[in-house]
Image (cartoon, rainbow, N blue to C red; front, side):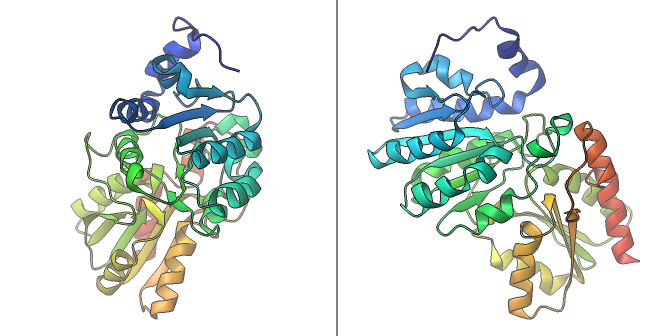
Length: 325
């Protein structure tokens, strides 16, 4: 189902103009092919939305356009992996995690095949597309599947680092990413290790644990709070599964409060994973989960939704101040 790429098309030109973060995925895959890895890629009619059109233009023989058949794409990726290929397949997170859950569980994870699943436009980043296209349950679903690693990079450079690190990772992986417009948090060639959180700072009052698109606004709030004299820490918990237990318990040992921030339902995602660790360890630190509070997300531009759900820097800062009384 592949066809020629029109590099003069509006969609192709808009990748650079409107979603520069998407280039990191395709460029990382191109680098891996040039380094000799058996990488193949595919998407379900969204090569412009996820930037894989770049990969398709460079290596058309390694790219498959599956059309609007997401479940078939995942099963086909499992078949490719069984032959020794290293498949990366991408579509909207709401379709990949919800619609393709059975195929991910049975064809990929149960079969222990190293498929890399890219769920892009996660959370509420699709805005006006509506609740059916918002992915606020995917972390809860994916982390409940055995032998499936779940990663939520903060920005393009961290995504590229995670993609390149995945060549030495035996398990299948679900990558949860945004829409390519996320502000950059890290420099290129950032150090990335699966299951190893990045600690930006420690605090005795409260530690923020954030993932994915919420790392940047959390860092802005963290900086403002520290400038105001609050003893606040910040952890980028990019790997939701396996979670960095040591980082969580270390923060809980030094902070009165733990505040998880996620562009996701507060049930079952990052907040749920942290709650499990704290409960099992008998930690005295109080946990506050911040995100979508068990409801279907509203329809509006993403910027308006982030403000409404207090998932922007100002909202996160206010949430911390309320927790501290």
